[in-house]
Amino acid sequence: MAGTDPVLVTGLLAEYTSESVFAVLIGALVLLRFRRYKAVGGAAVGAVSSVATVVVGVFATLVLLVVLGYWDPPVSEIVGDTLAAGRAFYDLVGEWVLQQTVERLDDVAAA
Image (cartoon, rainbow, N blue to C red; front, side):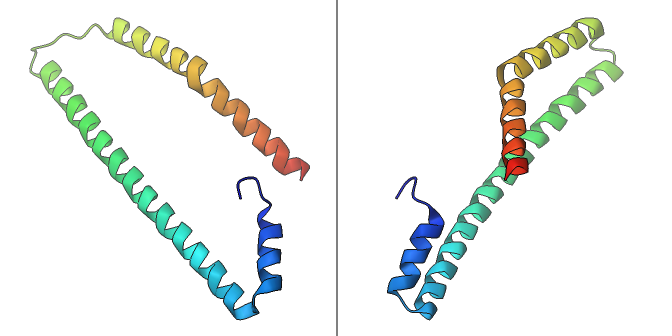
């Protein structure tokens, strides 16, 4: 059924079943999809939360090391490396994401 128009499929289902059975099938389909999205969304929130906790912990440790005088960070090198990493990330992923977003917005505007 990959590549099949959902309107065509639901139209065929409606022709061969009664309206109440059709409504139950569509309701079950929506419920199953919602449960999957809810589970995936919950997992994504958990992963982001864990990563955020680690990042905050590392940042707090670095700030503590600077405040206590154990580390004198090379700020200009850190900023330069961060900017270079950001440019590399944009060249690798960001430009593609931006292009896909613009194409989808054009498709929506054309429809």
